[in-house]
Image 1: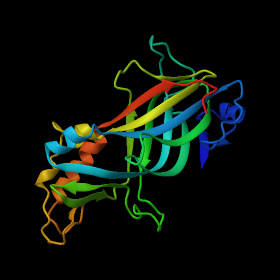
Image 2: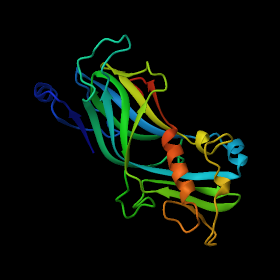
Image 3: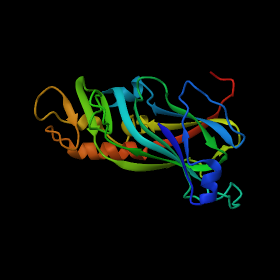
Image 4: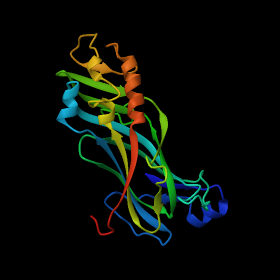
Length: 249
């Protein structure tokens, strides 16, 4: 896993060093004077029994595969003043990061030292897992659980880049020698909750094998539902940040 600082200006590239080795989540590493430390996590919001009972849906696993994560510099600060870095400059964290977001409250993707600056959005790429030993092999996303007591699995193999900004357009991630936390959250309540965008209870098991499959190529007749579910999940990704203490474990 490497952290790549892409710059349009060659002088800046030489000054900052083009490629940095990313710290593991267990090794905080020493920060340089022109760097801050950033914890990157991912979560899935799902409220529990009330939402699950709304359409008799219970979720047990939500696996995603991030190919890479990029932090994009802002063109202007909150006062509209032009910043030194161009918006096409970026910090790139190369994966893959394959995680189950329902296995725990939050999943740590990496802890890295990044150049000081103002970052306005995160871009990440979904891609198919290349791990032949993984349940996600050949897929970029998989959601499992039950619908009215019948097991279901939704999977997709799309390869797409997603740009996520803060809900408040005036919010940016500011790195200035400090320690910060950035969270990529998937709001599953908004997707399949009480007033969610997708009603999974309409899914069918046309091949009668006892498992409802929702995918781009399933034999259960749920291809249109798979497309709707993929679009809804993509639309309900949000960016959050939180400061943390340098002494935190």
